[in-house]
Image 1 (tube, chains in turn red, orange):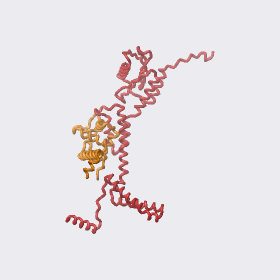
Image 2 (cartoon, chains in turn orange, yellow):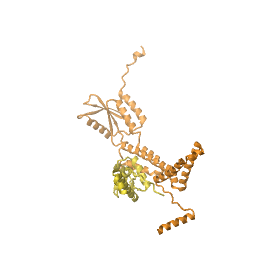
Image 3 (cartoon, one colour):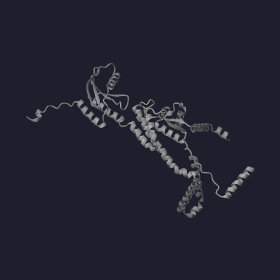
Image 4 (spheres, chains in turn brown, red):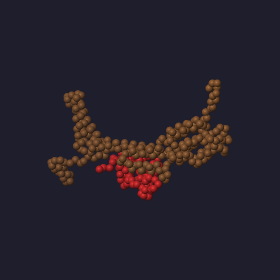
Amino acid sequence: MTRTALATPEEPEDPFDRLEAELADVDAAFGTLPEPSCDAVESALWTFSSRSSGPLELKVQRHIGSKSNHVLIFHTKAATNSVWMHITDHDRLAPDRRVVVATDPAKALRSRLSFRKQYTRVSPQKLTSLAVFIAGRDRSAVGCEWRSHLGGETGAGLSADRQVREAAGFVLAAVHYRFQDATELAWRPVDAVLGSRAMSNCFVLLATLGFSLWFTRKVGVYGLAASLESVAVVFFASLGVIHVGRRWRDVKPPEHKPRRAKELGRLTLTSARVATL
Amino acid sequence: MTTPRIRVTLVIMDVLDVIMSAPPGDPAWGLRICEATGHGPGTTYPALDRLMKAGWIEDRWEEPAPADRPRRRLYTITSVGRAGLAASRDERAQRGLAWANPGLTAGGAA
């Protein structure tokens, strides 16, 4: 007798067993959720009944479950095939419950996988913490403010997807803060130049001198002498930049102080003349 | 030290409108401002930050601190903010008038 003759014909693989194995892998990948409560099951049955036309007598045929995955298989009187109901109890994430009705286990499994990928990988709390980190130590108060924002008007909490959206907005706000800070930092030296007469004059002088040197190297001294109007254009253009910059940044330079006694005397004389007129 | 300039955008005006319209006993806070203006937190909070830096609004924390939820940060408008908003509204109105009827404004100026 040969071994092949003794071997029993291979039984078709039970789809339930296959699903159970796949769900175990899902457990390992995504961790565990709390076991669904009776309310979750009742809610699922009610949802399914309301979707179907007419009353249905639902009878649980088989329940494959672990701590995180519950697939309830129902046999209905109205339908010829069994219905797979995949109940996800995600009270931890959202107050509402989601029911996936699928006619085959693979579809139920795929739906669950996509659902978990969509919601459990983005935690509003983690996003908020990231936003607070980006906002920096100087703005640590926004952490408390943003947590109260997620708590909603009543303090009970916004819905899960809205929390994720709002938390994404916090990250955006934090990036805005940093961008504003960087812009202010970048404007600081410019404001310093605009706010000081000496530095503004220095800027005009350096721009004119720089251009003159470059022009000299390019066309020579005679070329520069021949086109002095270009140098004048650069001089007045840099003066214009200073004036426009002061107006744009709302920076006012300090009042011009007369340095010499003669100048002071001239000023006093002029003001006295104006007074007599 | 000069207060930073503020560019009065539509978001800024919306935020200020909500803060101004809030009753004194129940000042506006982040979520309420977002819901009332229709702008997301990514737009609203930077606007609040700019207004705070410019001294147009001031903040305070909710007192006493509630036990069941985090404290809220409440915003109120300052006198500088009121004056600034009124000035920018006038400026906008004049600009709109000038754009709509340039001859009238040129005649008025002359």
